[in-house]
Length: 282
Image (cartoon, rainbow, N blue to C red; front, side):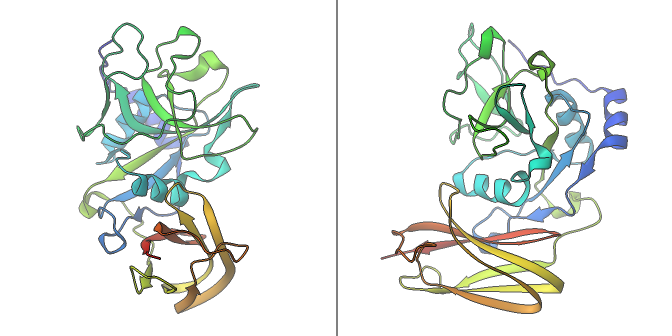
């Protein structure tokens, strides 16, 4: 089935009146292994279709977020999506999260996994489907990408789901979408989180010092995550202005040494979050 992205002036007008953005867009910095892009999440309490979300993202000089690597997926999920206000549960079913920027250009007669594309035209090479997805549930043509968590009630995950454009057939609604800007000049006010985090040394073999710099007094929660997005260690919240540092010795919450691999350190504040990528070599 060919997908035509339709602009709807009325839908966008309602969206601008009813949606609420994350406090400030966050940047996945090049210094932390990122692409330099900016991301935000927009909440629409009354619910929104994928088509309307896509139109709104384009109107804001961005596009629905495209997740092309595990590292990008972790950054977007931990900084923006991992918050219950952006999720909605189907009656007796799964928890549905925000829309992402992919759709099924053609389903080849009902093949749920065929011909998915990103709105930007980037290669469809990385996927993070939830177990059992995509599936064209109950025979519906589920041609649009969102987050999903199941089977625990009121859960959240970084994994994906295929959904129809409007999920009212399931007795629910998608409440949010993630927007991405490829260039800083496209990012709207109020601006960016003026907080940075870095790890030195990186790569490391025994320990690394995480240094967090803040331009204003903020309370931090520092977490360490593995490449799958699972948190392996958390550090006590600390209020700081200027620079704060903590040493991670490569162990989990039980003091057990974690294996070699890629890890991410996130410093989360009320204004947003910053993430840095680390490489542990045993």
